[in-house]
Image (tube, rainbow, N blue to C red; front, side, top):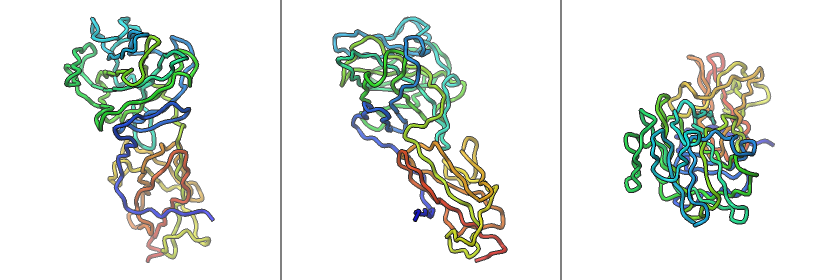
Length: 332
């Protein structure tokens, strides 16, 4: 017998699956959260140098066990280990970065491609910071204060504690294939702002084969480690908060994911309408998240089930998240 989920009132949580330790992305399909951003191992692009249109290429020393660091800008000269060609290191606007809708929340998607020796394939991504500014040629990063002159810090991987990401070059074949996708909440960015991405590699596992590069994401659907939530909106004739065999489903009803918990459908929140049998489904939902599922009701209607939240694990499909509707014709 299928288990039914009765919705209970609960606040939408900020899910951060990470403390001051390493996020291990050395297995295919691995993923995790660091200070509110989502990181996922991927093979996102065809192989071969040149397929990725980078906005930042960090070209440090390749064989001495040193770290590599840098940030994108149109300013010259560059400050750290950035490749000097404007083809590889340049200004970037927030509007250029794909926005991906994941479970009703909007994320900016960035792609990282790494290069390591096959005999020493591990690499650590030790620092990532994102800034916004009004111009594309800002410069002057201060490692002590972690500030970039003229910009506003909008994301810091170490904001919740000293964190780093462990990567394995062997998982993908060749340069230009892409090794990791990073999703940062889009609410941190302004559409007209320039985006600056500072990153540092090699503190835990040294860079040893040339360059690492960042590019805009693919903008495709996020399917890895995602799940679904489904249920039925029904006329609860006996007001017992249970979908009984004699009760019918209600078609054409709006169900939505209330990401900000205000009880109304806002711009960019995901919604759907029930089918003729009252059924609805949300797919492509990111795991390790809590979702608040709500039904839009009429002025004279009430619910026998309580509005609230459900938690979704990676690759989990939650069924029977139902809504019982009481109308004036079948009062309690």
